[in-house]
Length: 179
Image 1 (cartoon, rainbow, N blue to C red):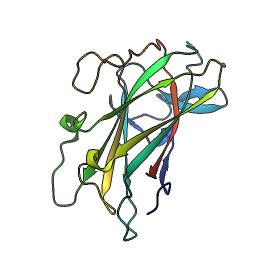
Image 2: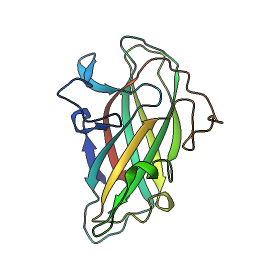
Image 3: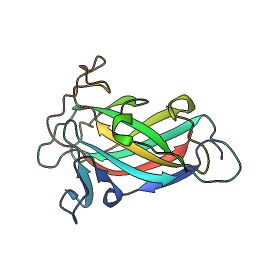
Image 4: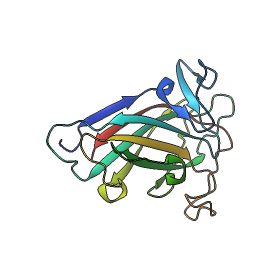
């Protein structure tokens, strides 16, 4: 693989929210002309994909790109959201209890909602190889994305900046690329 190679594109219907599977479009809501999954503070989601097998190891890690739009019901232009992204390898022949793994190698980032109403926001989170728990080409991986709210991965108060967005920004899609 080469840096920038697209590995997967995931749409809201493919997300599994932390609080249980989606039932139809009960959790996916209109966000203008698009649909997205609203993420309130402390909400999260996961999806599974396979890192392609092509004989080349990952370059330096994976980049997870998230596309957002502000909450159409409770817009918060300029609001800050704290994010956590973790990639957990699912290795054949082993058992992986993914619940306690959340937070172990989580990479945190912040995103600021644009001041222009209904403007899109793209947030990139780079996950270095050291945070991939030995994930390699051919592995299935579980990608966990959460709105960290005002807490970090260990449950302590976030130190960098607090999550100031009182609404639920809508996640419209996720792209994973080789870094």
